Image (cartoon, rainbow, N blue to C red):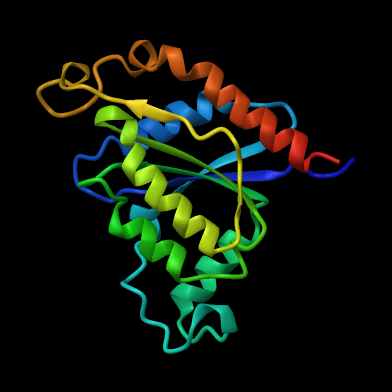
Length: 186
């Protein structure tokens, strides 16, 4: 039996008090699929510095231990889901930085984008699609845009009922899993 394709859900925010981890954990629960091995990759835990490699990542001449470890981690995955909030119509710098550290490790791998924000974070999704295209990733057709409102959050800025608030997006997340499985399972 061949191993299940590994799909990494990248938690694309490191902001204190973030809800990105909660969104990514919810997405991973909803994306469970018998033919896929899903796991979270938390950029706050990875804690990469701002890009500090002296050469262009496409040359793959890494000099820093943190880059080599990041490369080894990402190389072990068959596809990715980028989960992140929209900040001022853009994506978080920590996510862009993590993507910029590498090149070949992303190349030709399928990617789905789950962005959340007012109006579903569509501006940040558009901007990120340009980045993933530049990395020659294969963009899946399903990229759920999660619309959030102030009423969803408690006094600490955390979701009150994420399962209820995002009920209508479950089908989209299952579609992402099915798309990965159809593409990667041999």
